[in-house]
Amino acid sequence: MPNGTTPAPRERGWIRVILALAALLLIPHVPGGPSTLPIVDTLVLLVPALAACCLVGWWAGGSLWLALIWSTLAAAILILPPPTGVDDAYYALARGWGVIVAAAFGVVCLVGSRQPFITRALMGLGLAIVLSLGVVGVARLNLDGAQRVFAAQFAARNSAAVDEMEKDASQVAESFPNLSGMAREVATRQADVQDMLSQYAAPLYPAVLALEALAALALAWALFHRLSRVRIGAPLAPLKLFTFGHQFVWALVAGIALILVPSRDALAAIGKSVLIFFGTLYALRGYGIYAWFISRRVAVTSVAVAVAAFPVSLVTVPWAVGLGVSDTWIDWRRRLKHSLTDGADRS
Image (tube, rainbow, N blue to C red; front, side, top):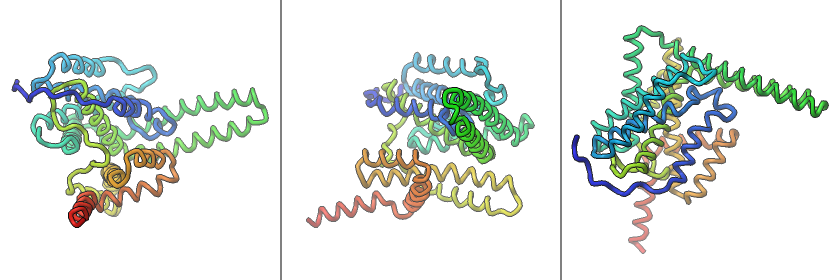
């Protein structure tokens, strides 16, 4: 094992990390989440990712105990039976994806130790997809099988949610007989909305799986650098500095091209997943540029409102994607910084 780098002070600021952890664990369970997110038990993504970070940190001279503890927890997730009411096939897919992503990310961290987090994460996700396809090929599995598993899981979750809504409607009817019709109508409409969301989400599970894994990797990275004094890379930059390689704009072009291929439903589904994944990254980049121009508090508040309010998102998300994509050629932050510097020099 190499000696590693000189121990550095732990990263400070637990509040935002705790809020991010709460979001990763709780958002999949809010209304709409179980109908659209393939993995709601996000610990199966987070724990292996944190174990991978700790193992890379140990290799760089960090704590062996930290690596052993989190590796044991990751192994426990693999060994323990699925929670009550959770389908075995779904839980096997979720755990398998979590382990493959963590392993791929760990390998990338060891090989590309000088790369920033986002580059490592994207390379790790790419390697995880290749490994997953290899497993599918070796085991002679059907790629549509995963979609059917998640579609069945969405249906089971929606059914459970409908049962709860019907119970609530019955309680409302008992307490307020005049509102019984309205309560049942609301429950029926909510069930229809959930089914519609699941129908759209099932074919796009690769993009959402990758986004969930990326969020888990980012949180694991932040947690590790607060638990350990060994650095395996630079800390996560704030949103206003978020960027990534300009070459990924070609992924958007490829996604559009796949969608436009006539009479190829499978390629169109892949193209849509590519667009959703990289479109989300470019939207974050656009929001980051927005946050760079104004105060962080105003930026965070406005972005949170835009995400929470669906009609507002219909306007702000495309705008953010466009701003993020245009940054490939314009580099808004550097351009404005140079403008401000030139103005200060003239004065």
